[in-house]
Image 1 (spheres, rainbow, N blue to C red):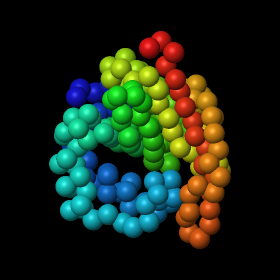
Image 2: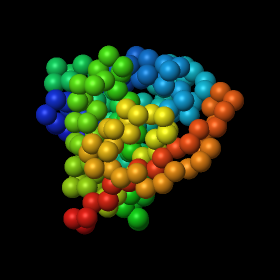
Image 3: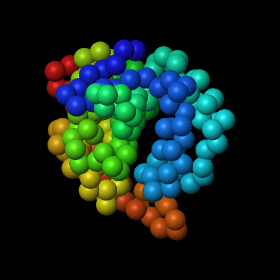
Length: 175
């Protein structure tokens, strides 16, 4: 895959050289609640993961892309997961390093991924699960047209307590 280009960012496929960056993100405990992970990953496990990401999205049912600046500095990741070709929908998740938040990179990345999902992959809709207290992500998804369509009460259990989670959805009415 060639890079998908936005106004401020590019999205590109993962490569083995992304191991250190992936290791940093996946082992950042402040992000574990969002990713529902509670254990660190070794570099060996992540290297094996990187080796499998070269397969087709239709085979893996997911696609993880690196969000980079125009100078190719890694800023974060954006994912399509639960890729369902028959029903033409997929989930979306995004993480941008803290020092790059609030600069429009996440919005640009999400807009580029939406365009790719609808115009190249032929998807009809995208969805995202967002914790009720994650105001940054709520604003991000709403800013590109996602609608809050449901509340899953006491859906996520993390560090001894339950949290509510919103379901956001964007339907491409063109298809």
